[in-house]
Length: 348
Ligand SMILES: Nc1ncnc2c1ncn2[C@@H]1O[C@H](COP(=O)(O)OP(=O)(O)O)[C@@H](O)[C@H]1O
Ligand SMILES: [Mg+2]
Picture 1 (spheres, protein in one colour):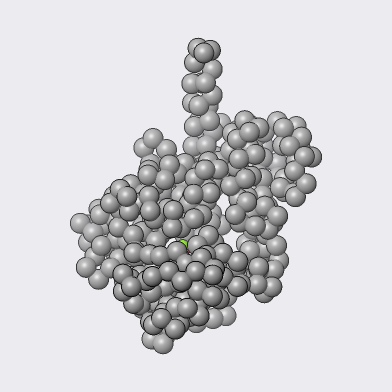
Picture 2: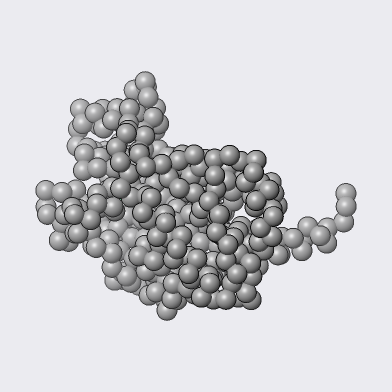
C-alpha cells in the first residue's frame, strides 16, 4: 500500500505467570515479533514508529495523539501484564478515534471468553465441543459430558494452564485439574469434551471478502504414545521437550476436497459471526466422523514470523512483509471507509 506513518503499539507481558512461575513464552516472543513487524513495514516503505503501551495511561494518550500516525499497528496482547485488559487498549484507541489494526475492543474481549464465544457459535449451529464452565467454589453437573474431557482456563491463550494433566478420564482428575486452574490462574475452568482427531488452524485475512489462507495442521504422529495429543504449553513454548519437538505444523494440510470445503465454511462463518476484522485464526479439531469442531477464535493471533498465520500466508505465496503490509492496508482502508461514511452522514 502507499507508504504511511505507522505507529506500532506493543505491550510487554510480566515475566512471571499468575502462579509465580516464569513465563518462558512471552517476553522473548513479544520483542522478536515487534522487531519483525517493524522490519516488514519499513521494508515496504512505511515510516515506522514504535511505542510501548506503558501502565501510566494519561501520558500515553498525549504520546499516541502527538505521534501523528495514520495507523496504529496494534500488537498489545495485555495491559499491566493482564491479558484480560487487552481489550481495553483497543477501547482506548477507539475513544481517541485513531485507526488501528485488528479487531475491535468488543471482539477482543468476547473472543477471550472461550465459553461466550462457544455459546454464540453453537447458537448459529457451528459445531463446538459440549462444555461446562466451572467457577471457583462451585460444583457444576457434568453428567451430560462424555469423558475424556479437557480442562482449560476460561480466558487465557497461548496454552497457558494447559499441561498433560489437562486431559482427564475420570471425576477425580477433573476435580483436581479444575481446582488447579482456580488456584493458579484465579479464573473459572472450561471443561470441554475432548475431540480425538486431527488439529487444524485456519487463518483468515480480510473484511468484506475475507481470504482463507491454506489450512495448517499439527502433526502428532511422532508424539510418544504416552503423551496426550494436544498442543499444551510445553508443545508451544518449551523447545527442549518431546511435546515441542513432536507437534509439527504442516501446511498446507492434506484434506479431501469435501472435508476441506466444510472446514473452510465453518471457519469463515465463525470469523463472520464474531465480527473479526482484518485477520484472525480459527482453531479446529476434526472428530473421528470428520466434523470440524471449533475450539476457539483467535481475534489477535500470533503473527511472529514462525507462527501459524505467517506459515499459512507463505503457503499462499505471501511473504512475511507482504502479509504484514496487507494487514496494515486492510486496517487503513477499513478506517477510511468508516470515516468517509461518518463524514457524509447528515447531522441528526
Ligand atoms: N476440546 C478439545 N479437544 C481436543 N483438544 C483440545 C480441546 N480443547 C483444547 N485442546 C487442545 O489444547 C490446545 C489449546 O486449546 P485452545 O482452546 O486452542 O486454547 P489456547 O487459547 O490456549 O490456544 C489446542 O490446540 C488443542 O491441542
Ligand atoms: Mg488455540
